[in-house]
Amino acid sequence: MSSSFAGKKALVTGGTGTIGREIVRQLLDCGVERVHIFSRSEHEQFLLQHELKTSSSSRVKYMLGDVRDLVRVSAAAEGVDLIFHAAAMKHVPACELNPHEAAQINVQGTQNVVEAGLKANVEKVINISTDKAIEPTSALGATKLLAERIISSANMTRDTGRTRFCSVRFGNVLGSRGSVLPLWLDQMRRFGNITVTDPDMTRFVMSVPQAVRLVFQAHDLSVGGEVFVLKVAAARLMDLAEVVIEEFGEHVSSGPIDIKVIGKRPGERTREILFGEEEAQFVVEVPDMFILRPDHLGSDEATLAQPYPKGKVTELAKSESRTETLLDKDDLKAMIKDSDMRVRA
Image 1 (tube, rainbow, N blue to C red):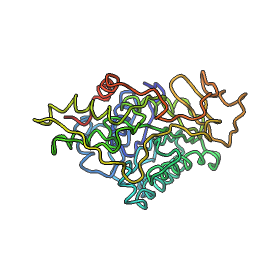
Image 2 (image 1 turned 120 degrees about the vertical axis):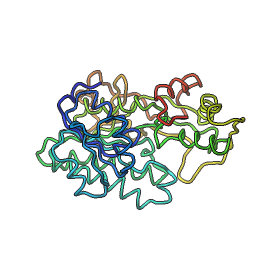
Image 3 (image 1 turned 90 degrees about the horizontal axis):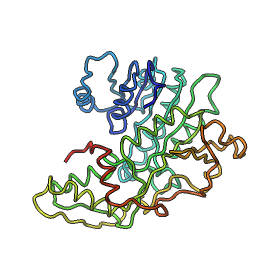
């Protein structure tokens, strides 16, 4: 837990999503003075009020709005010190079918958050990104790559204010709404089977607590413009499917559960990348993560790692899920337990 949040005021966009909710919970545990929870869903805000028991608390302010609305985002950012930007379209198929909406939310929405943060003169803006932004093959990846670039460039184009911007790049967060686990649980309940796109597909996987720890570490380490990438392991999609059946199958279905292979969906790829070859020259490695410094700072090894405790220039040329040592089933079971499976069977 970061002690640097005590007494601060924070805005969490997408604050009723899986990651947003966990950020809110941990910020409250860290002693923030107030949290603004910004999202589009009245119902989800209602549920979160009851979950946190904060409907009348002076430490939490619930604000309905859309990141596409600059006026509303600016109102939500008034008086805060920190912005955690978790609002986004996150599903590959939805973004493929609705690329304009994906651009409006993931790209224009991020630009609105930047402008609102600068107007409010906040200390830091931390943007939540995805490994699909690297060498993107989908509308989701392309829009999140642009969002990363908007955040990094904001450090160069800002005037004399104090605001610093950075991004964190997630793998698949098990149990989040953007992950496959909620879909599989629903399929088991309704149909007695689950669908797998490609049995040899690999993904970087992380638990919800791991993801939020990365966000808080990024806040503490950032000097502006970086992308922070947690060191996480990879897993085969088929292994994960079999673990989910073993762990939850008997609780949601009275009969045996089959796995149906349906093939890749539009925009999907068989492996993910934490950082690519062109980015590797700017990567600093610290014990728990990789830090991608913005390329305008240069790649001089004498200065590259200086701002980061225990930082060193990485020797990796790139990081792909298909070349990593894969998690076994026991590891996956432990990770699901660590996430406390917010999507309950």
